[in-house]
Amino acid sequence: MHFEREISFIRSQFAGQDFIPLHEPRFVGSEKSYVNEAIDSTFVSSVGTFVDQVETSIAEATGTAKAVAVVNGTSALQVSLRLVGVMKGDEVITQALTFVATSNAIAYNGAHPVFIDVDLDTMGLSPKALEIFLETNCELREGVCINKNSGRVIRACVPMHTFGFMIHMDELKHVCSKWQITIVEDAAEAVGSTYKGQPAGSFGKLSALSFNGNKIITAGGGGAIASNDIDLASKAKYLTTTAKVPHPWDYYHDELGYNFRMPNLNAALLCGQLEKLNFFIQKKRNLALAYAEFFAERGIKFRTEPSETKSNYWLMSLELDSEKDRDAFLADTNTNNVMTRPIWKLNCDLPMYAHCESGPLENSRFLEKRIVNIPSSVIL
Ligand SMILES: Cc1ncc(COP(=O)(O)O)c(C=O)c1O
Image: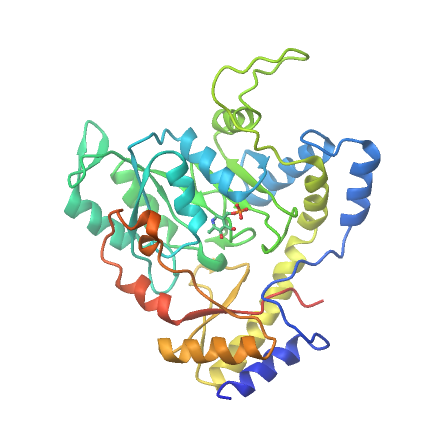
């Protein structure tokens, strides 16, 4: 076995566990008492005090004016894109190297993803690659960005902070503002990360967070939309509440909405988790330090946060030297009960997105062949 020492080091970090999962949730705070409180209150569904509390806490954690709790991160992205005006037949920029939900949320709005390369240091959307794509292929017509190849409007851009590593936001904001493209931030993986001190989830016109069971904090399943635009965020609350016009007793829905609200039961769990976010990040950063030191000695690149950013180190990752090494690492670890996973397949290679336009994807293809995630749970 080639990676014996790596496996025993990972095992030593998670002592006492036979099977070491990629990422387990930890419930060490008030989660159980809050969930019991929700049950006792009988408000287990989509309204309740924990929903209100969770929305306040998420706005605080992201430094935004208002947050809306929803059923998952995918629906948060879907509704955010609709609210910034994405319509059937539009195009939306995103990175090729992302979890499929990013592209699905675009497609759910009837829009077409356009796939751009990532930067090697952040593994997220490259502002430079985007700028080159726009300059080569697009023009501004009456303040609207038009893709000359397809004739379609490029309405929005969805950057994603891979595994919690923040992308180069200043540069991206500059390019998007020059080309009149609205940013909807996919901060699903980056809850608690910061860029130049500013929290993930505060960079988009609207931003999407995920609280799925595999994330740094979880609601069981859940997500949120955060924004500094109170009107847009209020519109998000209304659209995710079946577009019900607020009234003390009357039911009137004046457009096609969604039943996307987070149940109070899930919000109760998430309230407990939010109280532990900073503690979890500190624990993860300790593990990241230990990994960085060990893998440096072994001559394997452990991925660390880009400069001027602070990562939540949600899923930790290695960059192997080649595809062959990557495959050997995956085989050795998984057959020895240490769960590891390759990074995603590029979305442009998935059957439902194969027809979509892409820019050059050299960095995405480089990383696709080499990056693996290693066990990253909080160690108590
Ligand atoms: C990058 C990214 N975007 C969106 C999502 C969607 O979140 P959810 O699973 O809560 O729908 C996830 C995670 O699952 C994700 O990793």
